[in-house]
Image (cartoon, rainbow, N blue to C red):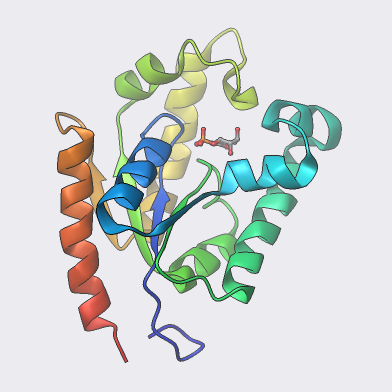
Amino acid sequence: MNHTGTSVRNIILIGFMGCGKSTIGRELKRMMGFVWIDTDAEIEARAQCSITDIFAQIGEEGFRDMETQVLRDLIENKMQSTIISTGGGAVLREENRKLLRQLGYVVWLRAGVDTIYQRTKKNRTRPILQTDNPRTVIEDLLALREPIYRECAHLIIDVAGLNRTEISAGIVESARYFFAQHSE
Ligand code: S3P
């Protein structure tokens, strides 16, 4: 039960850029028949522009405000049977961490620097990594964020060496157990 006294049956995916939150979100949707929401996509739809343009126009703090508002709205709308993929920085605000755990079962997809670097190096849609030294940025941010992901997560999955089916199957089993323990 969460603090509002209701049982929730949602799965929230957290973790650094490139750890597979969207890929696993889609796979969980397929396996469980849940609705799938990606908070970055929701922010882009609301702003009617890309994350890159949002960062350019209102800065990271403006983007973070929109991210918090999306999470508040998910609570407000009493989402159920939903998979929620979040942006890599969604856990940074304490309010967001509370909202995420209120929303349901929080899973951290943990990946190391090399995996993240390889998976993100050709991508141009992540403003935080558009620097001359993205590998160093990844190292520094990951060191800062790992304790925060850990604090927020109900479950930690090391994605290295596992394919999307294996990762998703592990999450489905653990989530069913969690939901059974937390049912009214
Ligand atoms: C961010 C991660 C991005 C997106 C934004 C900021 C971050 O999401 O929310 O570019 O601070 O780590 P992904 O983790 O889906 O790439």
